[in-house]
Length: 120
Image (cartoon, rainbow, N blue to C red; front, side, top):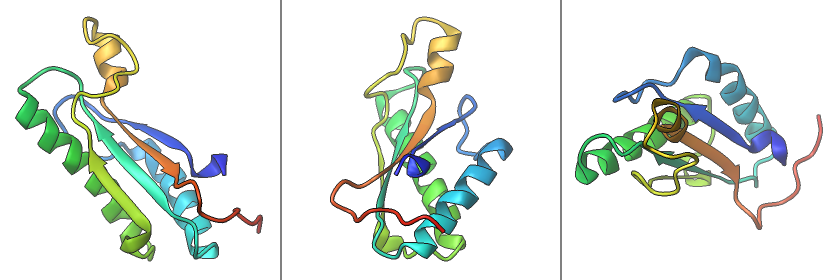
């Protein structure tokens, strides 16, 4: 189910999905429409710039904007959990611009316990 794993980078202080993520999101929606019992989790993250409260909200917006895209493609929203984790689980140090950039992201992964993905 690696084709259901995706990390989407976000620009500083925005919840706009980058253009280059759309083709991967289209693939994920197609897989989910073919496999009706597959579920995914979407986790939004931020860097440490800004207040905790603001970053928590921003991370929720990021997760939900990705969920909305998939729902717009016809995926049942009950099959998608979207949560914002703010500054938690940084991939790299927030002390550098590169690190902060890596930490501004949304991670999509299959929910374990969902069934196997069938190939088309």
